[in-house]
Length: 377
Image (tube, rainbow, N blue to C red; front, top):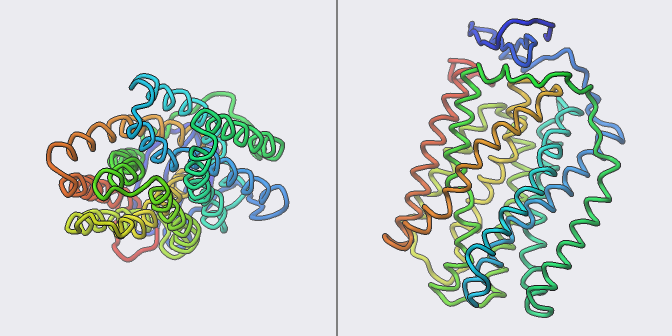
């Protein structure tokens, strides 16, 4: 039950209830019945599903380019095109624009859904896998037919058209806060989630960046087969985001977050025992995208369930993702150094170690909400 209160953000655990004071409001969470809120959610309707569709397209554009960047990366390395500074500027410019699209897109569906929040968010973030599936194949075909310059121009025109299409439907349902409230920074569970995602971010883009490069350098696969690898990877990512986010969160609630982190960690160590051969990178193309896709699809759902889906949700997500950017910056250089100095298996084991640490913090976040092992949080 939400009530106006100026009490600082805090938490207290009893056998039946966990109370958070977030964004200037007391949000009581009954562990048996799930979070309750004074906010009323339509849980459907034309505008709600239009927002989900718009968020899907936004994820399609933003992460389609990110998940397909391995094709560009392999092309740049193979032909030695451009300086390191010019290649780095792509990430800087694209990252700035993409972040302005992403944060509203990932937070808006939670304002319209409560009971169906997992399903709605799963559908929205499935645009990530669909975008990666399309862009990884499209990029390879365009580079082969029209060259790098026109590939970038065509991609830019496509992204601009899609963004113009969804702009009218992406509407916030809640009134804007007069003042930005950072009271959630006082909650211990916020920091457990932060460290879980920070550590996961260190290894999130390892397969995206290095699968095509390693396929080219180790087994000499042509560019067309490299795009096939990424297409299969992203197809599995779609499955993880829709099926696992929609069903696993409905079944396990917040418990699902630590479970998926643990699954990703086991997959990382399991892959470390495999030898890299020409079979389309069998371990990584199936299991890892399902766990990572579900993990990142669940992230905004878990944050909204714990802290509430009011107008401060975008601020919370933006704060978390801004801090997580440090992991994105450090991931590629660290992975490249380990792979070059110690080999592919060492890099995969490093991925597993960081995933285990992320799972530990994710589990700690769950037990901050309730100490009982078998309770659905």
